[in-house]
Each structure stands twice: as C-alpha cells, then as structure tokens.
Amino acid sequence: MTEMAAMAPRVRLGRNANLVERIYVYRRGDALEIDTITFYRIARHRVLLEEVELITLHSQRHWRLLVLLGLLGLLIGSVAAAIWTSGPAAVAGALVLPLLGGIALGLALPNWVVTVQSRRTRARMAYGLREGKARAVVAEIARAVTDLQRRLSTDRPAPPASPFAPPP
Amino acid sequence: MLPGALPLVCPRCGAPLPEVAFRPVIERCGRCDRDFEVLAFAPQAPVAGAPALAAAGPVEATACARHPHNAAIANCARCGVFMCGLCRIDLDGHELCPTCFDRLTTEGQVATTRTSFLDASGLALALALLSFLFSCFAVVTGPVAIGLAIVGLRQKKAWREVGGRGQAIAAIVLGSLLIVLGVALLILVFVGMTQKK
Image (cartoon, rainbow over all chains, first blue to last red; front, side, top):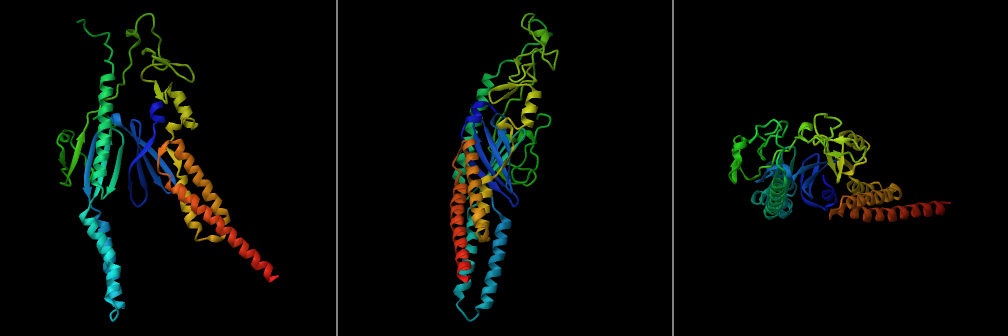
C-alpha cells in the first residue's frame, strides 16, 4: 500500500454476515479492505483494485430463513389457535401476520450480492432489498478498477531489452 | 492464470469458472445453471523482472546484495543495503529490503501490514448491553464500556473511517446510564444498611 492510499479515507461499501462472522467491506484508496469480525477480533485483508479480474452481481433469496419463518409462523399460529379456541381468533392472526409479511417481503424482494474477485482475494457484499445501492457500488468499483488498470498499463515502462537479443 | 492465483468461481455455488467465459454481461454457471451479471477486467501480470548487472552499463552498475547478477536500483530506507527490483518492497512511501520488512512487520511497527485488531466498539456495546442483566456490577462495567468505546473511536479515527461510529456512541450512552444505575444501586444499598442499624 502506498503512502497516499494509507492516508485515504475509509468508506464503508457494504456488509455481509453469516452465523459465525460479520464482514464489512470498505473502499480505501486503490484497494478494498475486508474486515472479518469473529467474536471481537477483526481480521483484515485487502483486494487490490489493480488485480481485480471480475465483478459480479446476482440476486438470491434466503430460502432457509424463509422456511424457518414459515415453520415458526405455523407453530405460533397452531399454538395460539389451540389455546384460544373460544377466544378471539384475531390474537392468533396478530401473532402470525408479521411472520407471513416477512416471508412475503423476502419472496418479493431478493438480496443483492456483489462479488469482487481478484488474483488473490475476494470481497462479497450483500444488499438486502436494495438493488439500486448494489448497482451503484458495482459501478463505483468498476470505474475505479478501470481507471487504475488503464493508468497502470500506460505508466508501466517497457521491459528492458535482453543483452543477448539479436541486433535489429 | 498465474501460478498460485485464486480460481475465478461462480458467486452462487463456488464452482470454478473457465477463463473464456467472462466476456458476456450475463454469465451462466455450468454447475448450478443459474445466471449472474459479470464485469470482466484484464489486469496486467505483475512485473517480476530486474535488469541484469551485465546489461546495466559499465559505470553505474552496482550489484544487488541478494542477487549478485542483478543490478541494484535502490537502497533500503532502513539499513541502506543495495536492492534489485525483485527485492525492493514499496511500503508507505518507503523502499525496504525483505529483511527489514520482515523485522518491522514482526515487531508490529508497520501499521499498514497489521491484519488483526480488537473490535473495541463491538466489545464495548456488548459489555454495556450485558451489564444491564447484571446491574450489581454496573459501577465497574459502565466505565469499562466507556473506555472501550473511546478506544474504538480512536481506532476509527486512526483508520480515517468515514461514519461507522454508532456502536461506540451507543456504548458510551449505555455506559453512562450504567454508571448512574450503579451509583443509584450503591446509594440504595447504603441507605438500606444505615436504616437497619
């Protein structure tokens, strides 16, 4: 990392999480910094923009979470219905409706995932329900990668001529 | 693909992708048969060469300390040893030889090469939240949470991070509440004990 990159501000681009760790992705100078937080320890690695080969965008749905929410709604609904057989059915409905709403929202609006792959490392960011933000991040990274790689290709000096090459 | 490089993979299922498959905007993975949008780039391979001493000219040529056949192109900023293009490491605007780089990173003196940190803000917030369950220790845990939150804020400042101070600020607020709660509990206990007497 150059001195200028080390002094550049660090801007959060996105996050990703699973059961055991939280991942935050930042843009800093000519690199993406990926902070992986496991318990209370941050492990940091970088994706250098000059090495980026691929940026992908895809949408996905958390099917496991949706099934879990559905099962939970079914369980709460059946328990509530069994308890309040003679009481107001609205109680059971009030308990189940938010879960059903969550499932409907998850089915209608997917999670957008941006992946940046380089020669040595990868960064992955997920944007729940925010396609516009995901596309904006892709565009920002793509612009930075294009600019940097073009600049490097023009700045790079020609390789030194071999002393054993035949004379022209 | 360069030797030792990570294979490019399908972002959905992780299956390796063939290198020729990256030109279209929409790509389909051969394994999971689902599509994704792709932007492909062609980064230049790193230049790992160094001019040979024999080709450097009769006057200016100095041999690299590690590679006697390569011409030196710089001095180490720390120990002054001559280095060729293979040995030179650019770090925070300084040029270092591999030995000095190893030593400085082992001693933790180069900030940009550190890869492991304490998540002070997260720890402060978790401690503050947990302390509400164990309010009897609030007088101790409140200040500790505030101290950790301040460490977290300093970390963010040192990293020149834009935003992302919510956890630390929440921990400071909760830590202050804990101190008030702890002092109130202590006063109640003290008053109770004096009334019994």
